[in-house]
Length: 314
Image (cartoon, rainbow, N blue to C red; front, side, top):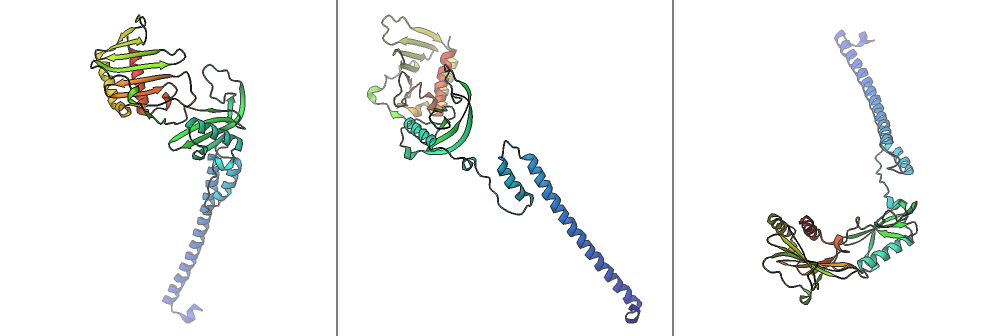
């Protein structure tokens, strides 16, 4: 048939065009098949990798089972993991108990407080893992909650049992900024003499005695009991002049003068606490042993530096 319509050259050209077309179609089919296979392999590989990487203790089984099929098909759906708070519901009794405790602690109305997060827990003892140093705790698993309450920059972390009838404040995990009050002029101690670098007056506690400790420029640390007529409890120890100079620089670094004439009071209802009145050449600040862990960071650092200096004296 080709001979009847085309000359030899035209026949060769036509044959080449037909063969080229056949090869192109075959290539296209091979490419499509390869791409389909690659997509399926990628989907299978991704699904398998996800199954291997998802550990039972990190993702709840029902959530994982719901997610894996959709991810396996790479089908473009947008997925979100439900937060733990959406998977659990905080009992009203726990919520009310925590808010009431936080309101009393922070001296704020409940309406101003908010629960930032909560999480169900299994505590390892009857003290909810917050035992005091001299407290005996029953060894038992206690179902309960870890609840975080906040207002502004302050947060309180509570451990509770299942119903909220038992709860304890985790002070180390909490972040409480005490609101200072201005010390009235009549309550301020006398200013330091020129040769005195620093002074601490401690008063209160169970016995109610008052002690005064002063640091002199030459490194002497003198401690006396106020009202001791015979001066029988006087003690004199010493640190190096270099330590005194380092301490003065520390006060400047921690901006001790920023807290001039401020008092950080104890929580309402607290009793038998010791009040410390610290005075430098630039001002006075007052706190107590209950509120110490809730002082501003710089002030806590200054207090620690002072206590370390006293401990190093000989």
